[in-house]
Image 1 (spheres, helix red, strand yellow):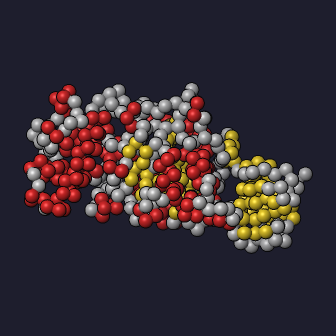
Image 2: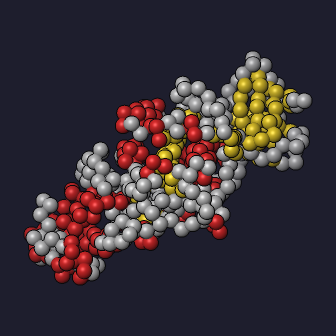
Image 3: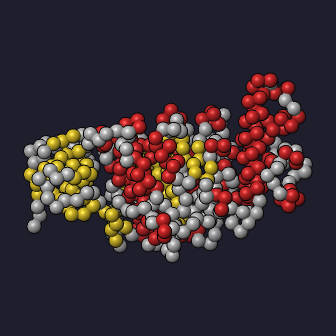
Length: 463
């Protein structure tokens, strides 16, 4: 027998409140039917002894306190899953929007999945090649890692996301089992079209599952979008044995949607108005990445978030950095000088990189050349600061060589074309050519064995 509740107790923004509800549960899916036949979907986000708060996906426009019949389905929002989801485009609730029909599911999964149990985690060892030297060489992405990208308004994070989808691959014989789940939250229609067109034209859409939540979609749908994407990734990884890269943009839009809903519920705000549970909410999604012992497949995450006013201490990047294993930071000054991708090397790091590079993994010289490039580029910043005070002509011969090295590093190593795909060998060889422009006695992070094998005595010659 179908049980429906008549009338509502209160309507508050995207929320409706009912009273006298028995037997319902947190996160349960709700259907609301209006007098004109319209149907709305929602989920329970708060329960008390007297009241039940429902978040309505399609918004509350047209709903009154007296024209609604509410039905509780007895289950949470579930995503239909099968191998057919590859190459498909869905909205933020997991419904197909590409005109190719419904998914015939092999199974359905609750989108509110659980973080991976730390006891069952397997330590990541293998890398994912992105084709970008600044990431592959100096902040290597490891299979099973969470490596966010911190950007700013107007910086090319959308172009970087597209390039990652086009170029990312695993370099062993399992590359055929590599897939990408792409989730966009709160993006404008032209940006969503750019993503879709780019993936189709480059021929990678067949290995991509897309979830698109547009800026004019109901804000509450933004809460479910990353969870749908991670549920699809878990199915492909742990049921189909695939290695899955999940790219989620923009996590700041997600956090702002969470803040809006929290405000509607009149919860006590924390920093900058965000709810006090923002950390645990983000962690519940980020910790769904990893490798499970004894199971094939892996989930690697690249959350992309914009920093309001380029403030890296803003709550969203600040809390994200606590949870994840490093970050890639985009720099406005580099972007304004025409350097793409504008990765701020000295602010970026990959905490899992040190145990997953070197002989048998990438190349024997990778740890050494990476450390030396970091150290030398840090010295460049000191020399540039000195040059602004005394002038470049007054610098010592060694300092002028550091200035030259800095220009070469930015123009030849960091800077790439939007469709330039460098393999790891080319990235490391390029690093040696550039570092060889410095005197040998300045390079104290490299072993004599590596010098004999890779150092260019002619002094580089890249420029």
